[in-house]
Length: 520
Image (cartoon, rainbow, N blue to C red; front, top):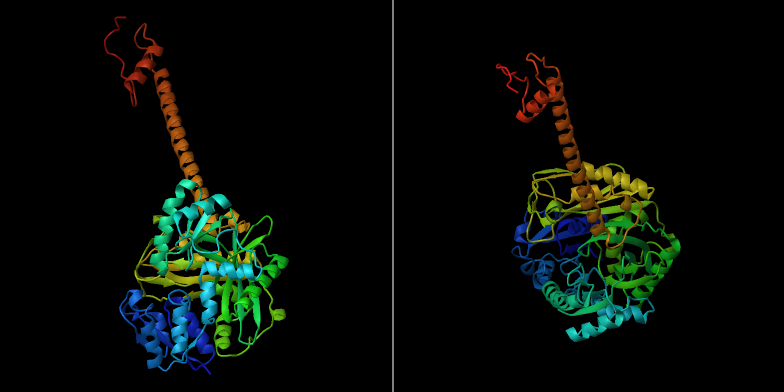
């Protein structure tokens, strides 16, 4: 039986796992870098082990240090959370070799699904439709050029070894391919230690929809429906929903069945997500990748299904069967999540590290905030700048949006910049409210904002011009009136000329009549 879990992560996901441990009467153990000594997740655990300096390669990514910490504290299991080592098959193998339970899928499943190219091959073998493209890494630029020509532009280059938008480039024209190929390989090598990339036909304006699955060691594989993840910035999700605004039960069943089939094909255990691109008009879907871990956006599925995914993940790793059947899964209401980051949306989302000097967290009906910070917490430059995941549940999507608006307006963070103002605008956008979403939503949202701002500026400029003309007209009329009221004290004096002279001289109040008799 698992009695103690070491959490090989930090921030809000570590806090989320700690809470699941408490619900199961399991003792949580934290690891932390020197920069995280005062972090929330450290204070919430029964034990905590410092595993090195701030850089993640010397702490949270150091496999030997994490396993050593598990042995020192006699932890029965390790939960990787997401990010860092969560999808590293070598880490899972090292944990198992140390006699500790890895809370996640088996090593072989991780290896197959952890590589985007081998995952595409597995999907094809299981009969799951994939986006047209290569099923093996590209060997050269020449091969990339030939493949792109075969499928037709636009195409997408993607890193074989990871996700999160790293090593990903959209190529619209042949002239862009060389630089995109070089940059994608370089970024992939930096992010994942593997420069391999593959190529897909770019599906224009698709929805990004994923299916949550959970599986145990008794042969049970169940899907928990879909999440809409189309609102992305730089290929990174920022807003997620459950269910999708499409809310098509027949499509959900088809995609769920495909996800379950793929999970069974690789003997998957634990929580995982199968991601698809969906053509909005035709409802055709294509396998994209599988995330062999807990997803950032899992709270929206928990809110709608009432199922604690982290709990099921832990108990499945402990050998217990899932606590529900497919027939018992139901989708009640709608939930939407915003990823709140320490970034400045008015400065191209530039990171905004620093101390949180003021904090007011929203609450009330239907609101859930998964956070790893508190007042006076330091948002470090060394790690992902996520502050929290703010989710709102409602009986309908409209009610969820109303509650999310209210929560975003209540949320206050001082001392640093955050993405809260950006989200406040999105949840009031008519296209978002209508559920007309695809992966290009944010770029078009920004275009609409820029157009609106330009129109407002143009209107303001026109109003200023109109006011200036009105002022000039009023001024001229006043001068005319003053000139017309002057007495003709001298014979032959012309009021018409007097008015013209007054206007030309710019007389401000009264026109002084000449003292001498005019010689005209």
